[in-house]
Length: 64
Length: 256
Image (cartoon, rainbow over all chains, first blue to last red; front, top):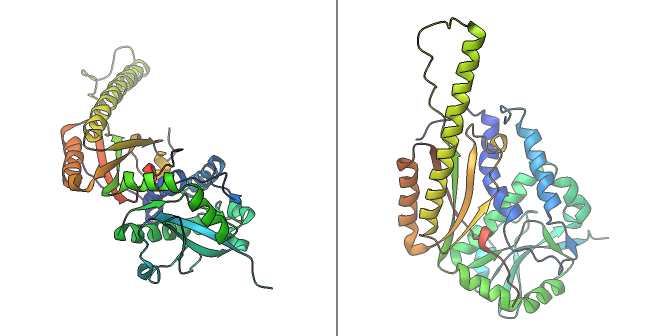
């Protein structure tokens, strides 16, 4: 069941980006405890997703 | 005074291919290099702490125009390494103060890195996203305007729509669970990520499953065919394959 989605051109980049961020922000080895600079934490994922949301919701209908 | 640098980690591998590094561009436009210890090699890049220090990263991660190319560069280095042999990706934004710290990490966690490398050797991560298929249009109430008036007719229609939507969602979840079970039987390991927000994903269908599957390379075709079959055979869901991915979702260091 494939159909094209009426997505504005400006939103095309984040479509693939969200799949990537799913993995680079939430996946990969976390070596915290060994780190001298550790920001790879849940807060950060939260921050960046919030950023994404605010950048995209201007272009998209909201979830409801 | 030269700018202070940090050491950004991309991946850990057993089979470094130094010749491939020269062709790569890292998150700070640097050429990645190797730090070796304990029979392992970390692929790292030198990055300025003015942009990649903790405070700067917190600020920059708020900026999608900064984050997007960094995430893509991090991924592209890892993808290039995986093309040459197994590698364990490191979580985005892992920065050390110096090579000594990286060597210490490799020595200290050598057994776990080796075990993680064994787990992903000859295997590839695939993503499968399952969405709720758009509901069929509800059947309009027969017989024209209701004698009880337009308001009552509206409420009846609205109730029918909600009932059919609820029914449709239940069927979708059942179908998604069956699809996941079928795909998991072809994989050596699975993980589920939280479903993506509709706005974030740029889809107008709601995601109900965001799965990752670690699949033996010899079963790649079977897995892709099974994904297509899940899409074809289940009318309440849309099934989308993403990948191949580096084993982001399956890179865990288990305590020895």
